[in-house]
Image (cartoon, rainbow, N blue to C red; front, side, top):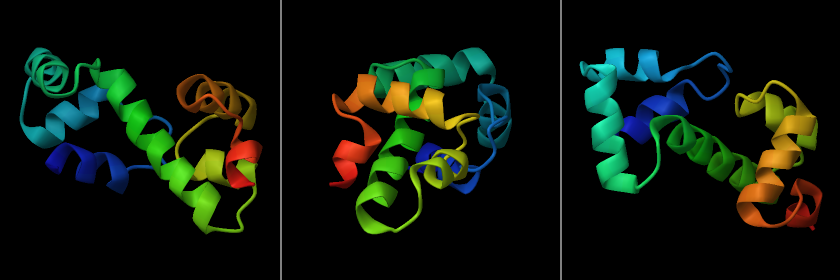
Length: 99
């Protein structure tokens, strides 16, 4: 829960990294990798991306923001990359999710 809380508090920062997350949790990078992998089955980077995508999906269904605005608000560098990752993760495009 604390990890998710930290990630969400830095959601708009595209440069928020595993190093920063580990520092805020007072863990080494390797400890963070092991703990996240054990708890979620995902690598730390994939877990951060997963949290960002979950928030993006929530925003798509509950707000009138454009897909580009949501992409930037959830820390993705470009809307194109956001759309690709979103489709790979959820099996449908952001615009299809919105409908």
